[in-house]
Image (cartoon, rainbow, N blue to C red; front, side, top):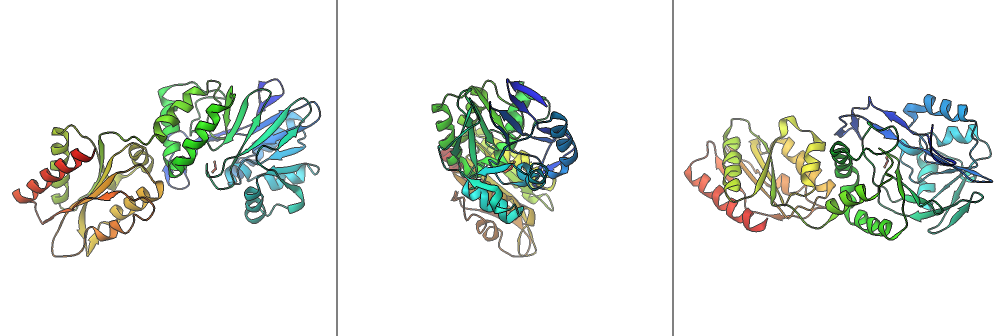
Length: 385
Ligand code: FEO
């Protein structure tokens, strides 16, 4: 446990061995689950708790501190932050859980927390700890509809739970403000926050309108220079895209590979940056990060039986749910005897609605006519970027 400021403690834990988040995004260095204690003159609050995987060290740490929380503030009911609430309520029989109404619903339904132990709070409501007031700020959709921030008004400390988080374990508590940290925050943003980009932009504006001296998220380091993470979020959430295209491809007999490599060269000649990703060796985090500012996504795929390679459909599904700012997409590839290369990919775009450009599909090994069509596609893409 580390004292951040007088009477305010960091009681999070690092999970450096964790290899993947949400069974989806690889974690190069694990992650952290942050929990905080705020002591007032009269009462003590615990803000967010712990993932059950780290139950023993967390409970041992709280026990050793001798701190008895009167309140457990749950900014978000996802189990990486709320998982130990049921056990903590047994250990601290007089503690009360404070959270949003949606969070209360989730805690009751997901973790079976007893309803009488929960008090719902509303936007702007304050909790007096004695010389210190915690203000609750509803912030739905960063990450779930239940999320809220907790603001320690006197100190200008903002506890944001998932918002502004990072899968970063190189700092004990405070941020080192390195490019590695920015990369880890970007990886985190691309999966957890990008689907809610408009909400992120809205809350970023709100945070900037407040007096915030410190941002204390529930993953990654604490920012005593909030402008670092605010500026990154400003860039990622802006409506602007780069003159950049991601080509995600899979090729069975090299025909589709020849096509995407030709397209890559044609785009490079037109000044369009291309990220060529072989999706047989996909890192979903790398792909999601590249999509943050990509103008377009090109699927390069072979026909497998009667449709595109299943990994292409998977990438389309991911792109759809992550909701990047894509302006357009298209399908490029090769087939042998028949089938529909584009339609199963098209069907994935239900939430994200990029413009669909005409496909370029060759039969077997691409010929001059196919390469000319790819040049024309490069002209079209260049005009859209
Ligand atoms: Fe870190 Fe949405 O939980």
